[in-house]
Image 1 (tube, helix red, strand yellow):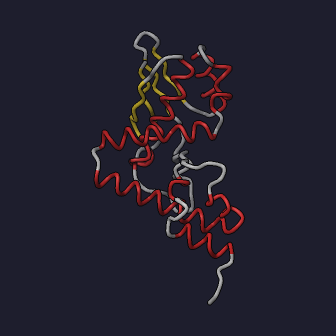
Image 2 (cartoon, helix red, strand yellow):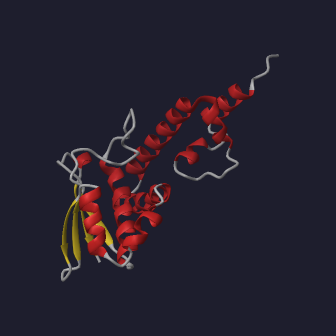
Image 3 (spheres, one colour):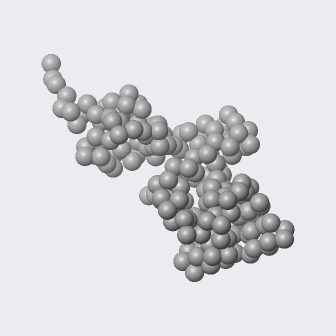
Length: 188
């Protein structure tokens, strides 16, 4: 009878989902998650498992849910990226001052913004020929414009915080849909 080393056990356990490694990929973790040990076991294998799990999840969503339901789910996933970037801290100086925030977006992030105060509309052009989503910027990108719903959620959260009221964001164009850049319509 051969014994598995701790490393071999964790690799096999996570490969079969025993430690809920898939949920780890979408931010449903805590500090005691067994999959965190994979960081020192084999980070590359862990990323491959997470990537495959997320790609499978998105494919399943596309096959089994309406676009409205998928949109709702993925918009809520934007919270993980927002928190990861500590956006509340970054946005703090701009809360209540949309003009200053627009200036920041244009000068620091290179965005192009059209702001119509009377119509309560902002057209936000990321002004990049590539997708900035961290889920897409991987060696084997997760394909499909479904991920754009998450970006809509991120834009909604970001502009809601700055404007101090709920906003609605929608994609006008998307690199993942074959457009030249990603553009959002923000209504408040």
